[in-house]
Length: 362
Image (cartoon, rainbow, N blue to C red; front, side):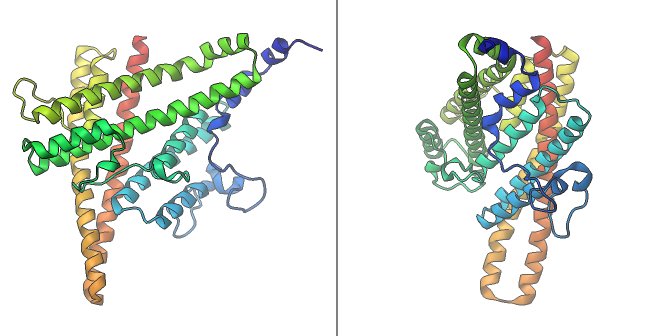
């Protein structure tokens, strides 16, 4: 019988990547057959364009997730955010399937990324069956310390609320920073968990010497990304501490940007391999991006107000009044979804540019 090392080394690289990301496959996969919910016909790109009447997405599994989210009675803003995330996911999955058909994802890295992104969405919106993983997306300034899920964040938020240093608008802005920080921690934990389970799967299949070689080839980039995310989390916590104690009107350190996602991108850009001209161009683009986020935030607030008003009118029971408010609500909902998709697509594009610049530096 051939030695264990020789048998393992003959595995094609593609199979190694499949083994690596096998623990990520938490989403129901297409089942062989014809015409069923998970059939190939329902999910292949060439068939995906034939959207059924009333369906939100071209891929059947994403329509099922959307229907499940609606049954969970998520808030209008959270549903609009999920809709944008699923639109981005659909675009990425269809692009990946085209690449796969052309043989351009031999090592399975792009497939692994698509699967990871979907797992993050499932966890963020509580669609993975674990209630404790649901993320908070609300503009309401309520006394909801439990929603932050971290004693350090809860203490800082309470200090900021009772300090008298913030206007209501500034508290709204700070609350978004806290929620963004919580989301970063959550995504880090999801990535850490999936990577740990992938490594355990390898250890069960390979000898220690094989494992060390595979780690250096297949896992090093994932570990580097984890380190970057952890560094960003620590920097974000330092910023929240500073702002919570000093407020936003510190003359010694005027803020370059205000939106948390833009601040993160700018911090990464300054340590990336950009020329001075490229960095200035990126700064200008971030300003436009921040304006787009602010517009999206405005529509989110209007959507919440419209939702509350519609519920009130429905309780009164005036059909004509209900019809007018429902029409306004639907228009706001569609506009919020559209802006949400544009914001997240723009964010994805900017993040990719920074990531490429940082990799070029390495």
